[in-house]
Image (cartoon, rainbow, N blue to C red):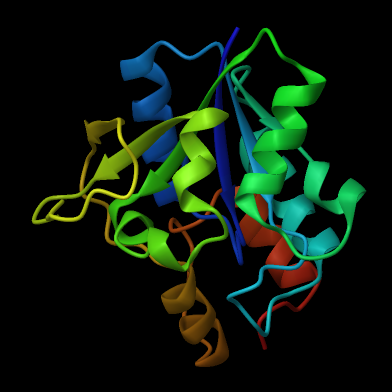
Length: 187
């Protein structure tokens, strides 16, 4: 099987994530995309709890038969290093072909990741190219660049808008919107 791996804080997951990942899945003809919420992201602070973030992912993807929640980082515990996740997934399912899906913003910061030079041993690197993105720094030997629709939604903006009492409706899935309201997240 061809499996896309899409990790992130998902703090919260928004429609931009869903739209772009569906585009990548379709263009690469992936059998599944596993959404992997980070358990303890080494480079981010001030997140909602893992349980809230994974619950929102589950609500957002539940109607897409190609999308699945993967809780491997929670099961492993500790800091969430992408390379460790890929090693574990490859060990568990050696016959699957893995595709690590990242944004162009993450690609240019790849040198800050743990063992970026070893990523391609476990997965093909797929970079979602946004309009205006520049790829002038090769961190791995082979990457697949996929042009995606420009979606100007960011989790940090959603959190800021919620703190200001603004509406985020139609930036997140309806079920996620209700979940945030009921659980009074990001206040």
